[in-house]
Image (cartoon, rainbow, N blue to C red; front, side):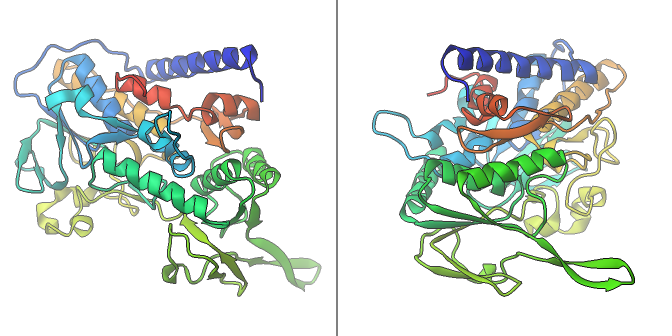
Length: 438
């Protein structure tokens, strides 16, 4: 990887490039609007303070529209860097890495931020009801509830950011105490997790088990997925993947059987806690011993705010949004990102049923379109449509390597390492939140 002045210049131009891409994407969507004068009776409620939520809140703020941002935590979590926060220890003279991944909402949004857990949404009364009974009226609603999944990739828990940071610091100690680590799941999260551990602790045995043939996101170019595999092998990660074997012939046609690699006793195992020599069994009957097991599977849409089954607190008759759900719990939306059947409710990010990878970058673009359409509807202008494009995705393979593609084109590893892997785009979130990174 380049170093010295060359690295600095490459990083500078890459950041400028990302900024230009953001502007270009907004221009392509036709959403570079100006400020809207405050309108009586307009109050936008944003549910969920992830990447889409803070982007929507900042857009509303810049346009002069009244809004409330609701999240169960008191700080935005830059979970793009969550995996590194789970392996990189702090130092006495530096702020621990995990602390840099949490950015307090209040300092950015003040009284426009409300910490609380949404109990239900009453679309008839246009009210969001929080645990404890507090009600917040809305004229427009933007749902940005994101996805939920296993720690350390996700931290969707009611907790102060100080508590959250401590949870990550405690987990770092678990990783340090283990001589061997098994990462379950070879999607993009699992690939990055295995790479982070092996980069930070090259002498530890790291095994990645995956139930599919290919690694990482299937929407990536095959050459990028293969490159991710090569980087893991170069770093010394052991891979247990699905294999194909000859199981017979019909005439001259060979029949191939899929030989799977999936943990069969995962529910019986202790996750995220170091226990020496835990025995893991695969569905193929193989066994292996490991000290620490990290699960990187099972991402699901976080639909608790708008579905009775997920929240367990409401009946279906009181939650009209259940009629707008896709099979995975995401909300069906039209081209303007309006939830089906509602002109004043928008879905943004992972909870929107848009056919594209669920990524922070896309959530930000959704937010811009949603807020622009609220402004357009208030001023009588034509609504903007959201258009999907070629896949852009970068995988950090530790702080010193990376693979990925931009707009469907494969990128050099060194460029991904400089642009994403080194700092994991933390600077971008701190800038978005208008705060200084510690």
